[in-house]
Image 1 (tube, rainbow, N blue to C red):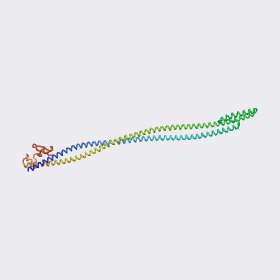
Image 2: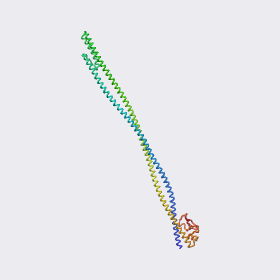
Image 3: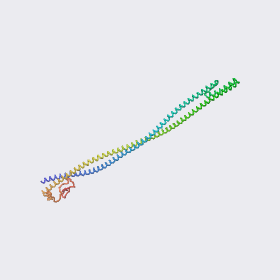
Image 4: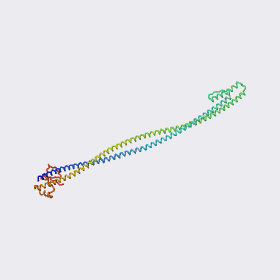
Length: 399
């Protein structure tokens, strides 16, 4: 009987030692998990703070990109208004230059028409004058030659011919009459009277020539007046041409300035657009990198949360196992107590046999501690749950 109970005691002690080791391992694992859990919680808090900072950074970068885009849109709109104003000014100047050119063309056409009419009029007057002069000269020559058939005269023009004729006619008549008959004074006087009559006719012809010359002078005066008008008109047209050329030069200079300004504005706008696009691309690139970091951080945070949840489940399972192990330990202790009580009651060798018997019968005359003789080399137990008395027994303190 004692051997059987001793065997049972050894089995219980072995079971108790194994359960104590298991409990200790579970508690160590729980302590480690608690430390890891705190570390994970700190890491999660740090990653969460980092995520918040990254989100704020992404928001700022997005706001900056929108601001850059808005500023560039305003710049383009302002340049568009300036360009439209420049184009309107250029259009107005072109229209003014075109109007001046049309006016110049109109005046030039009028000048050509007036010149053509004046040329026709001059040609007609000259022809009429030449015809009248020729007729008068012809009639006068014919009349003189008819009156003095014996007189011959030469000359390059009518005036020279007329002077030569009058001279030759006077000399010829006087000399002839004197040589033929000096006594015929009366006849000579008649001839002289006739000659005077012929001289009067010559004076008449001279007056006709004078009238003709007066007509020619009047025609020349009219021609000079017409030429003066034409010169005046040509001066006005030249003034118009000079003004048009001056205005064209102004328009050309203005167009050059506008072209330079347009080129400068386009170049500045292009540079501004390139700079804005470059800054916007940099901001977008930076935002993309920050978003990638945020995505990686969110992924890491999710993994850490999953690890934390898994650790929490494992911890809960370990707590359950610790509770089960503690229950088994309590059962083992109870069995040991029952076995010790039974041995003490049967052999009567226990030091406090009555008290042990009371324990077996369900009463406790001292306390609830249960002395179990267990060697330290056989079992490793949790010092927080065990105490050693003066006789070398381990006492399990109830929880």
